[in-house]
Image (cartoon, rainbow, N blue to C red; front, top):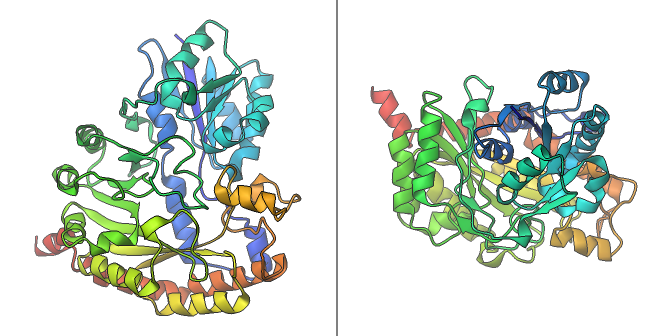
Length: 439
């Protein structure tokens, strides 16, 4: 019986030695990095859910390539190894793929980076999957059984209709497990920096019936599961939220998602979020000095966004404010102002990262045209915490130092403690937690 081993290179990359050089420690960010590392790779789990009956599979998520990973994969005696990686981990994925091929085992490589840089990826594997793996997966498996794998499989050459297969959640090894669930694919906005929304295809929303089916599968595996929605912007489409909320309410799960500030302006939506079990949303405020092209109505005055944040948190849903440092016009003074704002802000959590020009984004293309990308900094620097381009008003070193200083302040013990207090206060208004206190 043929067997496929699924190997996602997971986790948030942080070049800890570089941060330590500047004396930066940030327990709040470390906690978030650990939480991200625990999230399963939804793409490969979805492919596992599509396997024909005569195929078996195993799931080997690893943060880094290692001898232990190699031994565990070889012990599976796989007919095929499927590897996925993001940009910051792709060098490890390439190295691992070459090792596996050295044992005569075919490797197929996919994901966002492989889609953006398929020519680069091709020498390291037998096949590159470009775009959505679901569209070509059965053909990949059939060709593998025939010993006739093609160099490239592209979802862009056939039908773009998605069948929304249920991921094989029972492969997740964590106890208690954290789950990812996708309710939409892509995003109708075209933010210049976005490395996911438009790369795999057009914006589509998953039918609520399929969402219910996946929630049921998750509920069968865990009591009180925690679900993080792998959406770019959950409420940006035309879907009516009532049926969506009812599906999550019936499943009785706690969930996190990403959206934009405009949900706080829709009168019933914040309360619906809370009553359906949403406990936190990540909201992209982005930059205080630059409005990125492609943001559409998401780009607004800061006060308007903050009024919406208050409305969301008043309903009992914590807001994780997401900020990008290093946009056009950034200076040490503007970064200091941002830090001062964050330290006094009402956010229950904060995500602070560096502008990162991921391949094939409009940002990457613009900086490439302007010859501002740093050639000496390869993909391993594309971590969201390393400077990979020449800033327009600062030197590379000045931006690095200012960013590391900002991290040290924003994720200090005192600042983290303050946000923890805000989050607990917000959740006192959440219907799920109020009910539990009464019971």
